[in-house]
Image 1: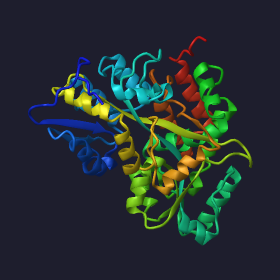
Image 2: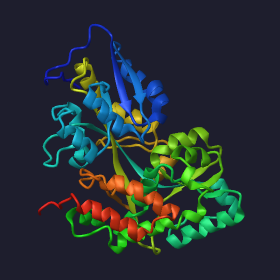
Image 3: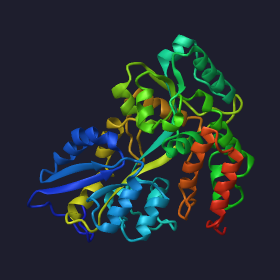
Image 4: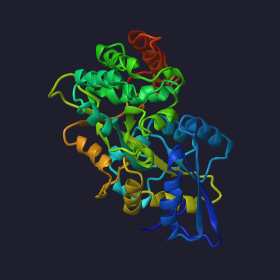
Length: 411
């Protein structure tokens, strides 16, 4: 690999020690970066030290925007996909990285979350995708004689059985952090209602609206979870559920593959995962396989060459192997053959043999305006789950806001 300097020429190793600050929204990954990934890089770049500086995911984008505007952002930072990062690029804060050698290992689809709409310029190095579904306590299921549900009817039968037994909270879910309901509820389960990419592309193209039955029914499905939550879900934070489930208080958690490492650290029981349920046996499953995380460098960094070289390394097979196994549940976006050791991560990957992958509903194009569709859904869906807003009203309000600024692309 030939590392590049800020102007596209060969990078020169620093003659004096360089400290890079690496920013991310993954607070829970600090030990992995500091204990595994950063030491692996420093083994061949002894003049570089890297400080991992994470920010809570709920505040990351706002904090990153403030830092970019104020010139205080770190040397390297994580990029969320599509609209948020695109806006930062259009404002001139992100570099064009088309000439990075390792970018060749990523397909147009893998780059799509961090590439301009014309497909010409890429501004962040793609790293990983994640998937969403339900993680469950196998001991609890065995004790109650339950099997993972496939259909929605079976899903509620399982929840009813858990609730009747009374040993466990059926679902580890709260509504304090709105994004969890929008993401774990609607984004994860909705694709089985709106047929994945078919529905998402129809919404983008203007041939479907959120007030159509497939979107309202998805919201209604999430609203039906209310009786299976812990008391006072309005006060339950995402971090609370990350304790509630692995400590054995709840039997099921609507969760993402990115939480495998956390669960492994805390859970003392065997776990399994099951896909979001479908209406009828034999129906096509759709899975939220989200293009999730990428990294780029600060073009105004005082250590721009070292930062750029590190970002290019994040596109290598070496890093993909380290990352995918240090963080099981994050699946490389590169064209590398990476063997995933963790059984839960393998289980997630097995879904793709039959399920069709799709992206999160509001993260491409539909959240570039104000109010963004994603911010609306993350505000409205907790109210739907709390029972204070009807699904039909939530859909109408979100569509009205979207119509106030969004113009479907001309085909």
